[in-house]
Length: 167
Image 1 (cartoon, helix red, strand yellow):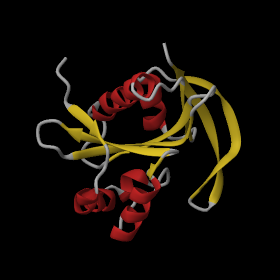
Image 2: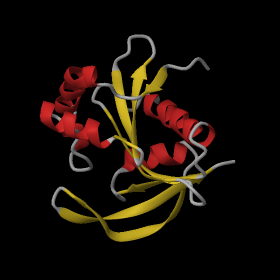
Image 3: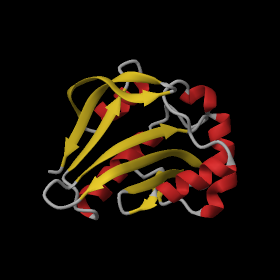
Image 4: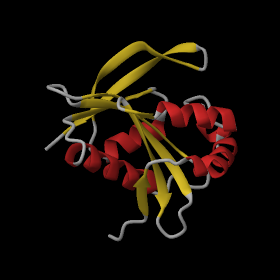
């Protein structure tokens, strides 16, 4: 099957398209995530994912470059652990088309081959059916349940731990 997406690092020039996509996606993302929907929030996010311990990938449609979604990699650890956490979201109008699955598979390949990581973990709220389905479709396996694991929208939320390991 021909790839419909490419993954790439964000650049400052992405600000207008990213902020517009985040604003248009607020209803889709609620209550799971709050994407950077102002220029200031984009700049803060961009700075935060431009460090050795964090990296972001934009999932872009190959035919026109449109932003389909984001996959954030955080707490990247090297050495014997070689692991990272993933967070992700689609932008409105690009959901439920398989674009994020293609992007996620590309990020996993990149993480395991280019970055030489061994493990990726995604912590997902149990009610987020779309996110759970994406992790499952991309080969992640449920490892456990963490009560009150992350603070989302001002409250501590339960999460399921899903992970994938290299080959």
